[in-house]
Image (cartoon, rainbow, N blue to C red):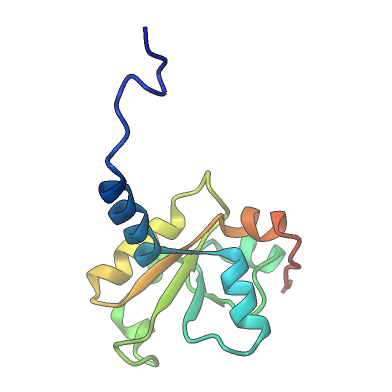
Length: 131
């Protein structure tokens, strides 16, 4: 009898390649965000979509606070239409980044999620800004 792992056959290598390649169109990770920010090469806008209280307690340095519920076109007017936004929230247990990404996509804006959120940022050993 097969295990739960093998009971459903794995995708073909071609299907797996297409699937995993597509994931990079939807998300980035904390390491890549940190690298771009620390090099001064951020070609994206990083949005912390959590509450004001959580943002004040600690956020990724350089992030802009814009809660996912307040993502409306008028708040995005300062950025050209082709600007890539990267959203993050508390971490894998939180769907705020996905909520923000959905709102941005509905507004016709390019968007990715920073996988791991604050939890992933801290797991990588990166510091948070406060205030």
